[in-house]
Every structure is written in C-alpha cells, then in structure tokens.
Image (tube, rainbow, N blue to C red; front, side, top):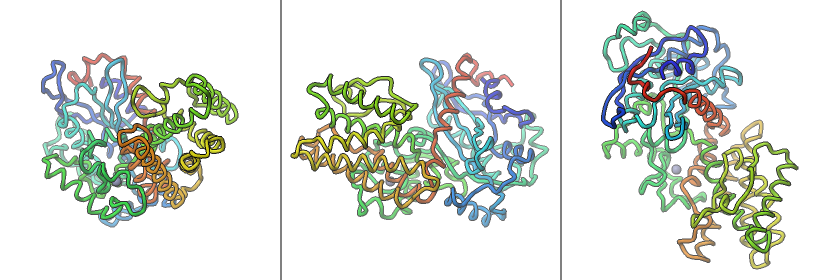
Length: 489
Ligand SMILES: [Zn+2]
C-alpha cells in the first residue's frame, strides 16, 4: 500500500519523504489497534514546488475568487505576509470503491487558485485508509491532527521544530530536523474543504442531512423550515451567530472540534458545497424524476408506450445536441422505483445532460395539457426553466451572482409550491415533489456561497472525484493485508 501511495503521491522525483504517524484503526480481527501510517505533508510539497519555481504568478485572482482574495488579505495582515504571495490550499476528501466490497477513504490537496495549467489540476494524496480499518472518530481525528499541524506551519510560514504531537523528531525525520525553524518563501492558507455531505459529517462533524435539529452548518435551518425557500425564510437571519453556535453545539454534545476547523480563518464557509453532489446527484435527479413521472400520462396510453415515447424524445434531444453523456436506455424503474418517490437514475454527468431536455419537455407538456392542469403545468415549466438557467450560468465566462441567486430562489420556491399542491391533492404522505435537505443546500450554494466565492465551478469536485477514483483503482490490486499494519518504506 505504501509503495502504491508513493507512486500516486510522488509522481515527480525529489519530493520529500513520507511523514509517519501513529493512527488508531480497527485491525483485521475487528479490534482496536494502531498503525504507523504515511502522510504527505502539505507544507513540504508547497515548499518543494515553490523551490522548483512553479508559483511565479500571483496566486489569487480577486475576480475569480473574491472571498479567497479577501481571506488572503486578512491572513497577510494577521501573519505579516504579502497577500499576493500566499498560496491557497484546497483539501478534498472522499471514499472511492476499491474491489467488490471495499473502498479507500482518501484525503488529497491541491492549489485551486493557480491559473489553469498542470499545477492547477494536480492533486496530491495526503493520506488514505481502507474504510473497513476506520475507527470512528479516532482514525480521522488522528489524521486531521497531522494535516492541521502541517497547514498551520504553512500559514505561519515557518518549518516546524518538532513533530505534530509536540514530540522530538524521530530518526526518520532527520531531514525535517535540519529544516526546523526555517522561514518559508511562500506561505499559504486553507481556503477550501471539498467533498460530499457524508465526508463533511465523518471528518468535520457537520450535522447529518437527516438530523432532527440543525441540519445545516451555515444557518439555523431545521427540517421543519427547509421548505421555507423565500426571502422571508427564518434561516436567512442571524447566520453568523448560527455558524458560531455550530461549534458551541458540538462542544455541548461532547464532540471534539476537528483541528482542521480550528485553523486560522477557517469557517463554515470554507466547507464548500459541491454542485455535483448537491444538484446533479441530488436536486436535479429528484426534479427530473418528478418531472418525467408527471409528464408520462401526456405521452401515451399506457406506461409502456409512455416510457417508450419519453425515450424517443430523449434520443432525439441527444442527437440534436450531440450529447456525449447519455443514458443507455430508459425503463420505468429508472424514473421511479417501487413505492419510493420519483428520482431519475443515472450518473451525475447523465443527469446534468438532461436538465435542458427537462425544460423543453415541460414546455411541450404545458402546451398539451388539460386546461384543468394548466396552473400546475405552468409551475412545472417555470421550475424546469429556472433549473436550466442555473446550469446555463455555469457556462458563463463570469459568474452572474445576482441572476443565479434569483433563479435559485425561484426554482426552490416553485418546487416547494409543487410539493404543497401535491399534499393538498393527495395528503401529507404523498411521494411526489418531496422537499429534501439538498434543496436547502442548493439554496445555500447559490444564494450565499457562490455570491461570496464566485462560480461553483471554482470549488466543485468533478476533477477531485475522477482523481480519487483513478487513485483507488490503481491501488485495488494491492493486497489488503498490506494496509498500514506493515508499512514498507
Ligand atoms: Zn443553511
């Protein structure tokens, strides 16, 4: 495993050696154990790349990363650095399947504000572990302590003088001992933490989507208010206090604060809401599933004909628009399974490719619907149009923050109205147009985070997900028994 990790993390020569730290895990028998695990240290890679002359340009473009540019100014003032020299580090975490029944939990980092190019797209594996070896929460806490220590020294701009736990350098750290206390030419700070909701919950203890109280780490939203989508929603108030109380609540519950969240200038807004997980794999899949299910009766005399007609229209759309990421077929179960609410099945890229089709389909259905259904059809059509507009904004050269915010409020409000109508017709247990927590997370993303941080493209996880999967696949041939129990460096 360690050899594979080295191949992944150290593609070029002359990178620093691994840092080893003791991490609690579950052993092969299912009992508590610990392992001497290898880490790639963020500050060491940053300094190495800098010494290779890889960071010649200013690191943060205020037009593309307005909030991070402000953060760079604040960090520079606080620590006596030059803002233009500061590196912005983004951490990404994810689990990727490895073999039939296992996955590898990975933490990686990159420099998201560098101009597009090799260094912009490069990812560096910090640490990884087989999921079945994870002892919650001790494994993640121990790994986080190493990462936070490394990033803290990047912020300070000084090489550490001892190990992450305060102990003296070990014989394996001879090289680090020689660097103790030296100043770094180019400090940096943690500007992004990327991943999905499950990862944020595991690593950072953010509330679960199904938490009974306070499901959001950015506001006071609870399940009973997540369908409140308008400008007067109560969760829009007291947001700063709500974010501060998130940590207070963790302490009150005896949940330790992850050391990464304790780093200077890291706030709830550093935890980036990802468009892929929130929309493609969440809101949009739910919306298209409900839209298709609602549209079926207008497309034929029985379910078989209806699905066949929908597929025919989809194929026409694919051909007309030269769509590359296509569903391979369409069955009724791809729209709705069993007694669950509708949800379109497909990969994120396949869902994304059908959002505009959904808008066109809704317009056709509006024109063909029964007069008694016009009000609902108009709501569906406008809702679909707003979602298509949001996806269109992602292609704009400059992120239209105000327009995107307006489209988000309209989309969420129309969607919630469809739910209200469905309940009025069929009762509160009805499965259609269900409002789920990701609808709220989508509003947070477009109405707050993207307003402050710029286009969701700047912090979405498409590239991270691909990279994590490739890394996992390349390691899948490694015998699990090698994992960390017998580090082989
Ligand atoms: Zn919120």
